[in-house]
Amino acid sequence: MAAATAVVLAATLGGGLLLIARRLWSAAGKVTRSVSAASMEGKTVIITGANSGLGRATAAELLRQHARVIMACRDRGRAEEAARELRAELGLCSRGGGECRGELLVRELDLASLRSVRSFCHQVLQEQPRLDVLINNAGIFQCPYSKTEDGFEMQFGVNHLGHFLLTNLLLGLLKSSTPSRIVVVSSALYKYGEINFDDLNSELSYNKSFAYSRSKLANLLFARELARRLEGTGVTVNALHPGIVRTNLGRHIHIPLLVKPLLNLVSWAFFRTPLEGAQTSIYLASSPEVEGVSGKYFGNCKEQQLLPKAMDDLVARKLWDISEVMVGLLK
Image: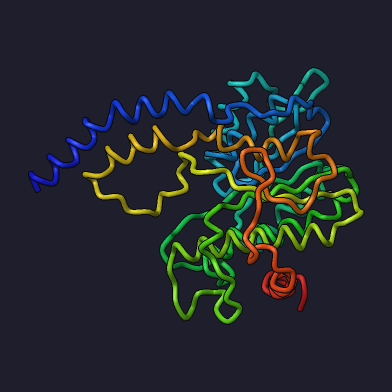
């Protein structure tokens, strides 16, 4: 134990200066502010998982562009707390009004419950006359095997199926608000995922890393098929990967106590801040540069190439058809 402690301390102290230098040197090369200077005044944006991490950073920047942001979050208490902090930070009004620029609303949405998704969408359709941007941001990462309220494997259920139903139920409002945008937050880890139609629910075998990658591949296939179906409607769909970001997404990963100091230092030196990671989401939600662009995949605010398995139209259509049945859109 003493030897292990000494190794960790030596690595932490010995590499500390190098990592600090690396962070300072690389900071200038990272995206630090959205390239879009467009105003979002008069536009309504829904962001799932907006109370922390990427979602909160995305909400803050769009509010600075005077958007009307709806935070769609599972934990109402944490969302309200985050909203209070954002209002104080940005000087926003608590409610809409003639003098307000940028408005922030909180609505409860649990993507692990199809009932909650339907309830949220019903409320939105009752309250909102328009929806300009939907950002499917929320996600769960490498959790132990568990199931959603409806019996789906948690990562596939939240990351894919919950957003699949949410998007479909809000399509009518998006179509009536054109030009409008759908932004899907995926991950470069999709590369390690496979769509196994014989075990979408991971009942035969479960690996939390592969399950996450599969859900992110499903996001890309969903975005591709949705973009095809929405051609000519004025609603665009684009997906993105935010890079490696310092958020609480990895809360289910067990890190040995002795390793945490070194990991924290590495994270600080090499990982992106939530604001840096959110730049592509902000870009796709607001930039005039991508007006009319659809069916693409972005990273660092630039179009990226996908692997063939993320562009397989037959798999994308089959996944869509099965997802419709799983969430109850088709009987």
